[in-house]
Amino acid sequence: MARRAPSNGSPSDIVSLEKGLLGAAFAQTGRLDEWQAQVTERDFYDSRHAAIWSAMREMKRPFDQPLFVDYIIAEGKAEETGGILYLAEIASNYAPPAAVPQYIDRILEESDRRSLRDMGADLVKKCDDATASATDLNEHLTSSLQELARQRQPDGFTSIASITDDFRKELSTAQSLTRPYAGLDTGFDALNATLNGLCGSELTVLGARPSIGKTTLALQIAKTCVDYEKQPCAFFSLEMSAQQLLQRLVCIQAGISVTRLRRGMLTVDELALVDGALATVEDWPFYIDDSSGLTIPQMRARMMKMERAHGIKLWIVDYLQLMNGAGVNENEQVNSISKGLKGFTKLFDQPLIVLSQLNRTVESRNDKKPQLADCRGSGGIEQDADSVMLLYRPGFYTHLKKNWKGQNDIETHVELIVEKCRFGPTNDVPLRWVPERAEFANR
Image (cartoon, rainbow, N blue to C red; front, top):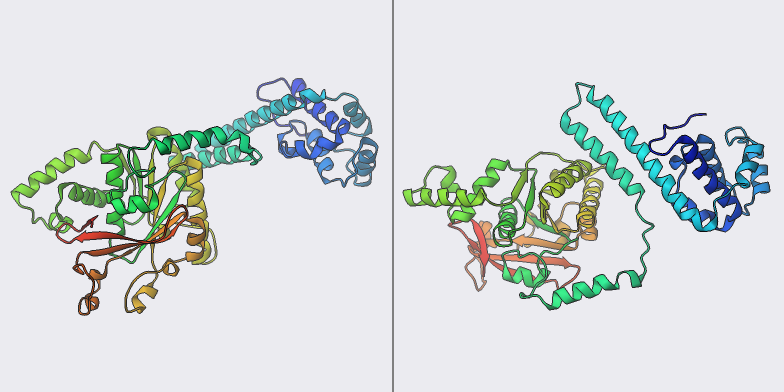
């Protein structure tokens, strides 16, 4: 009779708790479905009790002790459930109705302790394997802990009465705001007005064709977070190295062209600006992970570690299609990634901006103005994102300059097209491109 080693209470105490719950299930058959929503077979220390609980779940109703005995005999399960006499013993020694919640809490507590002990033993075994890296071991342990936490999530239903106090607090906070938006400042006035700033639990997708400037825009938003808001930001850069991002951040802070910096064309005055900017940037709570091809579980493990260590308030991923997702084709992979990213916003209750590459359909249109359908794997993105913004810079396209009829100079004209905004209007946010500094500004 296989049993997992007890971790805290004595074996006899654990067995008594489990017998009390099983006996209560015979005595209060109407509560069985409720209790089985909380306790599963894996939570039992005694294998006989796990078999009984499983048989109770599988047996068709109506349910009582005599019918249950008939069922396990018919199904050939009498031996694995301990036999008829053992079942009679359980049925005659049940937990008092008022004490059942405490019995369940203790059983789940002991189950989790055994699971943690098993994880520790498994980790020790894996550590002895010289081929496993410390990073892989850390991610394996984090994923195991997250799976255990997921299994212990509450039933999901919440009464209105239990959340009205939080509603009143949020309403009071919103009414007392000294600025006209609730979330983090993006650095762009019109964008703040449209999105209400960057709010917790919201997934924002920023899409553009290559070289239009989506990474630059994301870095400028990140700079506002760490420099103006004084809040920590984490940036997953799956395309550029951390050194390349640092170059861009320094140039944004110094107000000079990254091209001139990379080509060694800076003047003495510009070099002084770079030194000053670098000294400033060094003090920012800005964290970069430039690992390539991350999966959702890998990213979740790293985010949890960063959240514990630094209390991150804004997450940025550059960019979605460079992550590794589950699925047999690109659409399935993008869908699995977007669902995972949306799950992160709920897990951490922080805003997450994910950059997305647009497909080549844009290039086949005369006006080059992006649309929501241009997002690669747009179905999942449209469904999971709270906001979708598409970056349009007509000055990037040489042939558009010949017939440009806009009110602004085509070289500086920028539209941030908000195609979806779950909690606000959809509109075109006007921005300005600053060619000499290769960055965006308020118009």
